[in-house]
Image 1: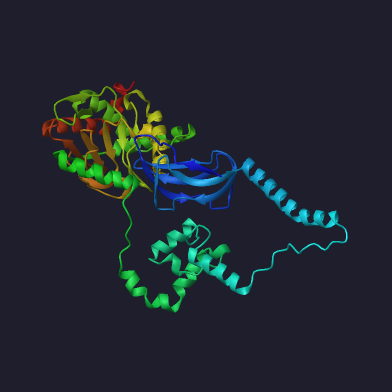
Image 2: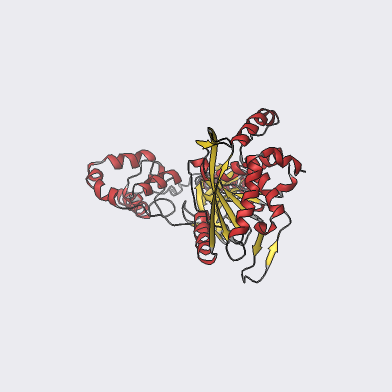
Length: 427
């Protein structure tokens, strides 16, 4: 048998959480077949089989922590399995044929009976008792990851549930039957009142540390504004059919990003970062705009690289690619690094206002609220119907003052309210 060691995932990661096993002990696996999903503090990583074979042991349960360079699972390679079976078959053939050869070698001589006596009832009982105490073939109650998750969700003890599967394996039906049992229902109120506790790991653990550090070490300056996107919505509706024929979905996000990259050219300090000692300010030549995505593994902030050098359609393609990857928790490390300024589109989930926390070491972040059709006065004093959204900026007040962020926001707002003016600046 061979042990599969958890490989070095990079970024200095030394451990990760086993999210889901795609195989069980005894399963046959093929080369490059997905075997397990693990979660680092960056994203979800899928680990595949190095070669075909049979899984013989899972060393780390779902929800537990696996160490880099430590055994993750054991398997018997395809060639090893065949050799082992042949050796076993040869051994059994030799043991059966040996008494027959002895019997033929001495005619007329009665050979002793070499067949072992069957186990007596006490011996069988002792063997079964030992197996029951061991809790399965590997010293624990056998159950699939899905069944273990169901047991945890209901606050049950897996060892207390009688398994009806092979080798006492606990099946989903066993858990559901246990929940319906009278003694379980009698204890239901106490179980329901008890909180479900789970460890904070992976992306959520990293987010907790980063948000605490940002909120406690960076003095945030908040600035709010209202933007009329009526003309921008009309422009998008005109461009959407053509974008779709080219295979891209055109949302407002690419417009927000292109306008921001242009505004950064006039106010480069919004694209700068302060060093940890607060002694030097680094101005970045490329505007890498991050977008906060609510993924299944937690908050991820991938960024579109060098937005100023991309066309609107290219930005739309990157936004679509990164959004899909983030929602699946499978963002590449390169897409998570190098951001210089961030957009949080809280309006996509129905929010109107938010006070965002800066994604350190960046210097600014904006939260965009939902678009609402509201009454407004035009230049002649008449009430008109306009599409309005609110934006709330947070800037690092150590090097971005109120006047700077206000001028930058006004420039960004001007591009969004009259999107055709961006044509003079686009490359």
